[in-house]
Length: 65
Image 1 (tube, rainbow, N blue to C red):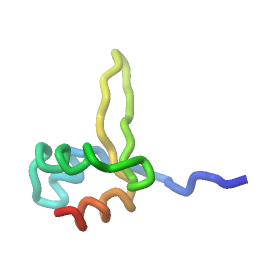
Image 2: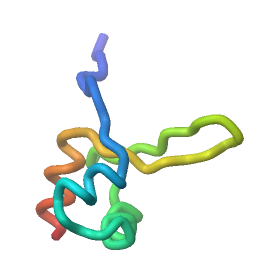
Image 3: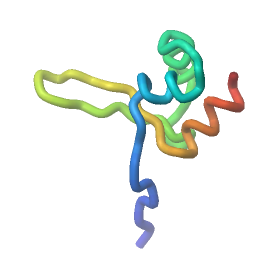
Image 4: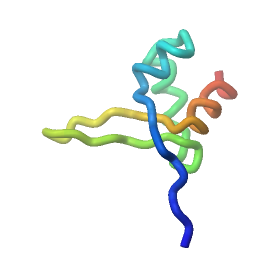
């Protein structure tokens, strides 16, 4: 049985601040990314959704930038 090895994710706002890029740019890049690339949607109350990235997803973004 394979277990998910992702232990944390960071929101798009946090990743944008860390990378010194705009949220809009990261959102445009993430639209073409797949779950396997380390991007997920996190849903909260009232169906509020936030884009988030695993450590691998952050590295994938760095390569795209």
